[in-house]
Length: 350
Image 1: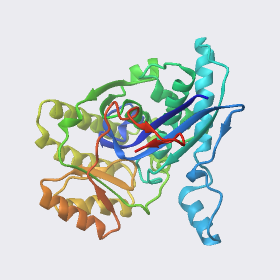
Image 2: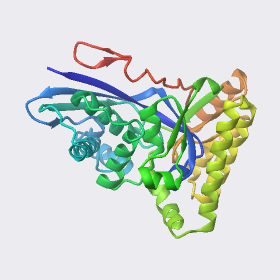
Image 3: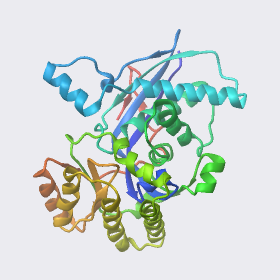
């Protein structure tokens, strides 16, 4: 019986976000501390096994209320189904014959929920990778993130952009140019893999209790963008410029310019979005010890750089005072997704 395993990692928007949803430019990276592991095994019928985020069992009424307030009523199975639907439709439309076999799919996820590390898109991208392996179908690399995005945006009505899916399909450090003419003509942007070794002294910090649906942050801004609001359109152009400057600085070895760009990225976001005080205080706490800081997504997680180990120690201590956990991310390589050992129960060992 055929069994395939795939893995997708958490991602951090490093520069330029949130302009990916507005025909801008971004730099993002995937990192290995958190991931989705997915197992697809041949079976008689198509079966989607609930994961932890589909849990329907609670310790108490209070636990039920808290979970639904934080995370809502929907889990990961809907994403698996949506990706499967679009994958099969893609094969039908392209005239790709797939083998007549069914599967049972299940997943495990340890990406903190709704804190801006792209857990939902990791489920989608892991599913699309598995479907390609299971049915021996190769989807062009630049097209795969678009299918994942359309699964969430078009099938499930979730406001999202391409950035997260690109980071999780490409792995590592990626520069993305979402030129409007290119995206509207082809459905994808221009993606450039960068050497992750260009990054230095990175940290990520997150508040495990800060759960927020990312689509809420974008709804009003998206409407203003569609109404040709000059401030929003100008800001998205500035975000894109920050990403381009960051890309050029990295490949030219001018890493000393990166901290200023990170801070500028957040300051610009703070002007356009209604940033919650709980999220802003994370950035301000990091800056108080001299580190750079910006959102890694829409809130709940920040990413930045620090000067030396003494400053990193102060950063950890400062952020711990407001309930945040801090880590030095290990950036995923292009090989990380496949170079895992499968255990006897079919799951991969870390």
